[in-house]
Image (cartoon, rainbow, N blue to C red; front, side, top):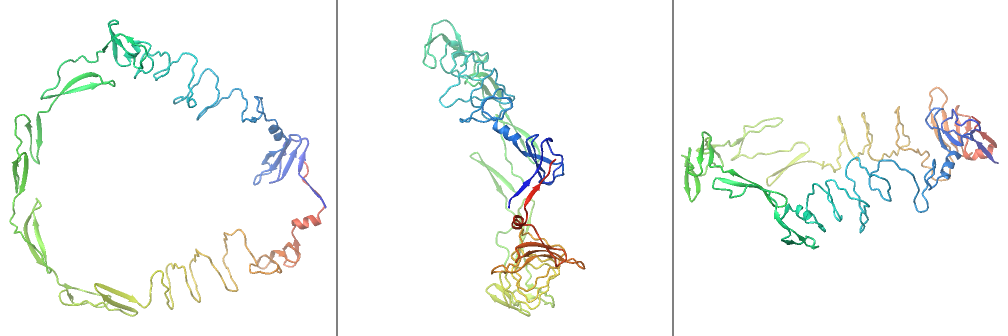
Length: 475
């Protein structure tokens, strides 16, 4: 049996004024398909398709046509008139127009490998460098000039040379082209001519980028060495005075072969070793860090000891023996220089430990606890899997949060389906309600009184029990 599902529609109104969330509507007036926006109000309506939009797409063209979408042709190209915009990155293709303007930064033109930049007309370069041009006009040329120099002036100016005299000398252009006939002399770059520097002055020379000296001057040498000590200052004339090193307290100086030697004077301390197994050394040090007296002092030979209970007059380090005795459940032993204290079982973090009754007032963290009964008055956090093998699991919490998005009921069923299953809600003194799967009838059912169950519409019973038209109406 066939079913027909109609949506809301109109032949006179362009846009519906109200649609439920997810409700569809079509207007033959505007040729648009609408949907009520999920989560929105009744007036939140979106156009999602229709003949209006398919006609726009169908009319797209690669030709330069007004009010049409751009459709690339079979070669991936399309025709356009004026394109206005701000470009970033590389611009490829043929560009026509009178000007190329950059609002910031340089304009870089890079031809294809092995190709050239062709400029039809006069070249104007502002503070730049041009190569491969037949003529260059510049009032402030900077740098070396390479290529074919058509005049001697270009060649000479690039090297800070000046042309003088008549054609009495012959020079060859740098590129080996036709000879340039003219006498060349170095341009005057420095008016200071003569000898510079002396025993009391150093010459200072300024050289330009072409290696030519443009200025020479002198700077006087210092002839006096200023000296200072912890107290007092003076100046030593380097050409006449003598610098003397004098020893102070407990120091003697000597000069041999331009080497100054400083020797520390002896003190009243007798050289030797101080301290023993029963005495420690004592020293007196002066402001200069020297030992001015040395001796020794006897050390204590008795160790006083005490415990939680009891004390002792002391253990003679030279004759007595210090004994460490274990208590209940604790054993002690000595091997070499090591004292070992042990209990009756291993208590490492990886050991299995057995106790009768354990009370924990703080936090107990464990990955394996075995007990007949386990009661926790605080929070219990299980970071691994929790398996409950008992017959009944009771949860008395008011709020239960479960991360799994699918709850499996009757999970121990292994044979053919034979049991009803569902969710029942306890309502106190009111009758419980439930959502149950009727295994016999293959239906989801609802009950509000615990005895009468209503079938819920499913894909199967919809096809079997409903025939006709579900109509969304008009707007």
